[in-house]
Amino acid sequence: MHSAHNHPDAGAIIENSSILEVVEIQSAPSAQAVCVVRCLSGTVEVGDIATSGVMHDGNRISLSLEVSVMLRYGMRCDLLDPPHSALLRLSGVVPNQFVNASRLFLTRAGSMPEK
Image (cartoon, rainbow, N blue to C red; front, side):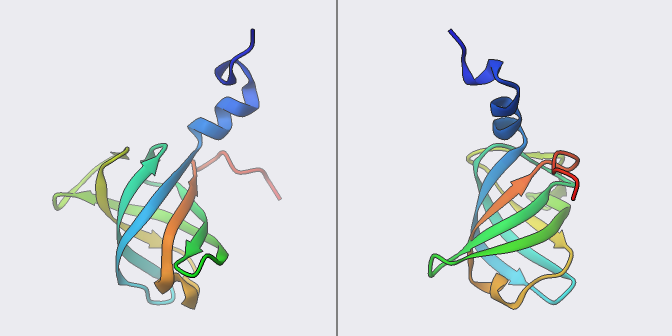
């Protein structure tokens, strides 16, 4: 019997992605966003990439925002896992719609396919 953990693609999908609930967006100028998030699944590390988001109205947007700083209780941390929360600084081009984000989908840095 094969399990998802024995299938190379299934394991990569589970281990290299995460979902965050956006609790509060503190700022979102054009080059970075600062927001409080709660990890719903997977784990998040500095360097991970937010590849898409779901807005409060249900629409989905494409993103390419790198987790550049992650703080828990005012201190830098290396890992965020469920059900914990953290303040994230996301670097990259922040679209105007980002202020309405309710969920973020992240991929582990280095695990995205080359274009």
